[in-house]
Picture 1 (spheres, rainbow, N blue to C red):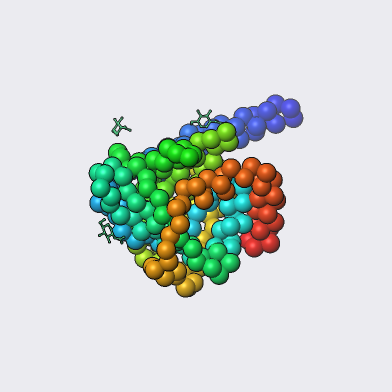
Picture 2 (cartoon, rainbow, N blue to C red):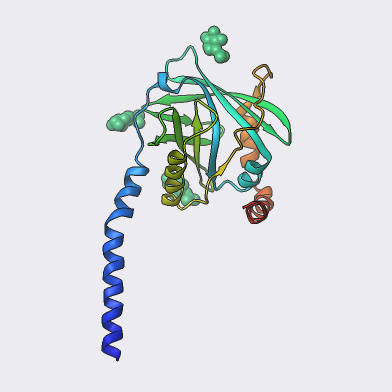
Length: 220
Ligand SMILES: *[C@@H]1O[C@H](CO)[C@@H](O)[C@H](O)[C@H]1NC(C)=O
Ligand SMILES: *[C@@H]1O[C@H](CO)[C@@H](O)[C@H](O)[C@H]1NC(C)=O
Ligand SMILES: *[C@@H]1O[C@H](CO)[C@@H](O)[C@H](O)[C@H]1NC(C)=O
């Protein structure tokens, strides 16, 4: 009896081991491998489609945010892009403007916080999948998908979900593509200090985490 059990356990272990060695490992490596992308490919309008982030409060925010888009434009410096980022939260549109470094298929913000964004492969020809790391006392990772149009194919969504799994992040929260988009003509405020104040609000983190789990529980 004991022998049989041990043998069965060994078979289970062996098959788990071989499963582990085949598909998942190598495919996660592929799915998380940064792609090469030029500055020209980055420029223009990108609609935010959805994403996942471990920044506390971000999941609650994602449920309250009904629309977001980015306009990327050149600046006088060849390695600097300007971003105008617009979003509708609680029904109100507002927009932020900031400069980022774009070099070597990588977006960088160095001040007042350090953010590095690389781009991952996607199933959708006019999409951009961004993996964003914020390096600070606590590190944060976000996985975001943007598109030139307001929706993505089910295949692109499936791939994004796999990428989130590979990063051990919660399932991405998608925007409803029927929502009204924010107009172009809102005067943007200076963006990075606004984003930084959210990141610095460490006292808010516990509340943010609490809200996130509450929203996840009731909305999913
Ligand atoms: C992009 O930048 C150029 C040159 O600075 C400017 O003429 C143009 O209006 C900008 N486009 C947008 C959409 O902001
Ligand atoms: C740019 O990318 C190349 C090739 O991927 C790499 O060798 C190089 O170190 C990168 N440079 C910077 C500044 O990241
Ligand atoms: C944050 O990430 C950086 C770079 O990957 C790493 O060196 C550092 O140890 C991380 N910090 C924490 C608190 O995990």
